[in-house]
Length: 428
Ligand code: EPZ
Image (cartoon, rainbow, N blue to C red):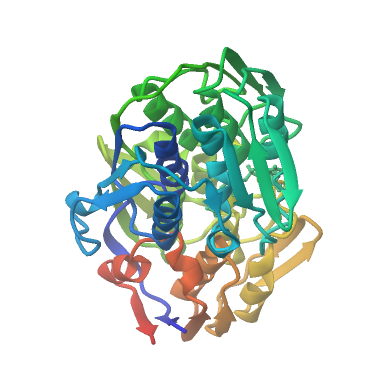
């Protein structure tokens, strides 16, 4: 299994391309189910979750075509074309769903387009139990019959889904996206209350509206959808990945270097920009789509955070921020309010000499002067990148096992860091 070997201590200098957002691309790809006409998505990131989603859609009978080649990191290789005119098989098998929980997003669009769906229940996940009850309740509200058999969700509806008022008990990105997509083809009006407001939801709504949907209020807790008979074709550019941008911002700050992020606008840093600045990281928009990141002083200031749905501090930046706080000039607390088991990186960072104690959903981080390299284990996507960030500043060598976690959501991470002067090798 591939591993990453990092020799720490280098200040990073250079520029990094920030690609399209994985968490926008996945539901956008699924939205192709809703139309029998072509959907073209550009700025596609080359990460393994995208390949998994493409395979799932192909298994449903959707034609998926890439413009350039997978090796083409120019704009062409970032274009996927979808044609669901011959969709035939509304089934998502366990084999595909267990690889990627986002497979659950197909439930709503399949119900709306084909009136039935059989989707494997996604199993457990390293960061939490992650039930899908809010997705199922939303589909039932829209008139679907939902049954669970042998680990599968079997859903069906007579005729079209019916518009309804849905009050989410909890803010859920995925359930908001699933219900919003399903409601585009429902009869009448749907209102989603306590909806998630993430930028990825705005991006999805913009694409659906370009396909002919009538969605209002995406990005606010109250979304209104007027159902239409059918959707058409569209060409849509995926927004930049704010979590990838935030990760490289911390790479610049933690090494005391300077990195230019190519692609994003400053607004996508909402939710964590202030905390980075309080820690001593400087973010400057130097052109319409370039942000320069550097560190102000010699030390990193301790900053306590608590994760929350957007526009709060994103849980997907929590682990990376913990690595920064591990070498801060003082103590901080990190509270995780979204997922109940998202501190798997704590003991791995402690193996690298960090002074962190986790008590339930709060970790107390006492900054240390220096970290030391060690062999560590990646457990999930964001935990693995927090170990990379720690390895960049640790004395000596860090070896990170289970690289596949990283490849799910970071495109060419090692290559990008090496281009900024990091001493990294991929061990096969
Ligand atoms: C999305 O997951 C992201 N994934 C996650 O990113 C991200 O961490 C999460 O939103 C929160 O921002 C994608 O977009 C593909 P939720 P999602 O539904 O939609 C509970 C990464 O690292 N809940 O907003 O699955 C749930 O257990 C990934 O890129 C229910 O109880 O997250 C959690 O505690 C990791 N019942 C909370 O709500 C449900 O039916 C928020 O989850 C659904 C969710």
